Image (cartoon, rainbow, N blue to C red; front, side, top):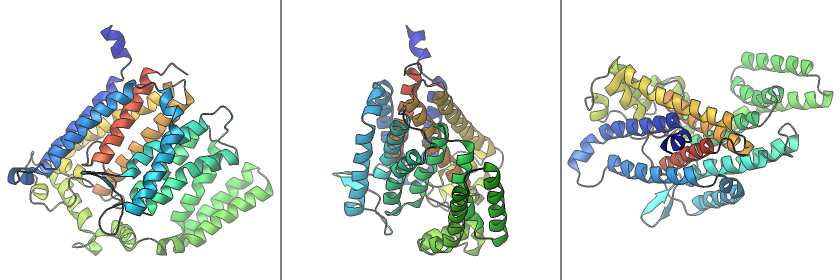
Length: 408
């Protein structure tokens, strides 16, 4: 009986999550070490421990709920998430001009975290219908709107990092649902053009490649002309998009390209993070011995830059262990998606893998200066109740899908 039960649990996925949670608690304790010693009130470490315990309960519940319920109530959860996102704009709280939290009594939470899961469920239900063909324009447009509406509401808060994390899932999800590679390329091209438009020669090269691709694609002349014109328009509108970014968003991108331009201002975070990681060497400076961490030179060390603590105190070896846990999680999630008989379960699983993977790449990328600072937390490791509970709920869904992998 025990062996049969164990066969229905993805142990690799479960071990990877527990490993990430343990890694996060170790780093968070170091981050709040001085605060915990000097204060009688509960620090970040104790609060995170509570969120993890609640998250484990949610994960267990999500694992054993009949999986059809998630499909049946996908649209209900989606519209509820939209209501909460609108409520944030009307009644939300936050700092520095941002409204990202809703307060209920003593507690506050971020509806944008809940929206990630709701969008995955709603889009998966729509795409999993036997009548849906993602290569048809109507199907793709409807699927896009499922993502775009919450994307715009989250962007309005403003929370560019979370909004991007949400919209990035769209194309991988559609590809997994059957989008042809040629159509995928045409959808990715405007993003490439957007980046290329900052350099005339790069922009010109991309447009020539697109022109050649459209010629060999052998679509109608009208289709090719409209696609080419769309990409030209994207290139022309880029300066307008840049001017509409918030000042702090523009500054993050400029500082990403040259952090030393403002070492005591906007570039301070990236510089201190790179110093912390670099000083760790191969085996680290020792637990609770990191000078950047313990002397509070490292900003936002309990959230955005928590991985720099691991790099400083445990070195390159410690960083590799953390990456190994993430690799096992992502491989397990992808394997679960490929094993599913249910199209709905498969699409949700690949969406979860994409979402967690994007958060991981962006967060670690910004700590080592390879990507701009976006404010995205590191899944299962950074401090935060809303993100932790959402990630644990997603893990519960993956475990649920693994248990029911042979069911339609």
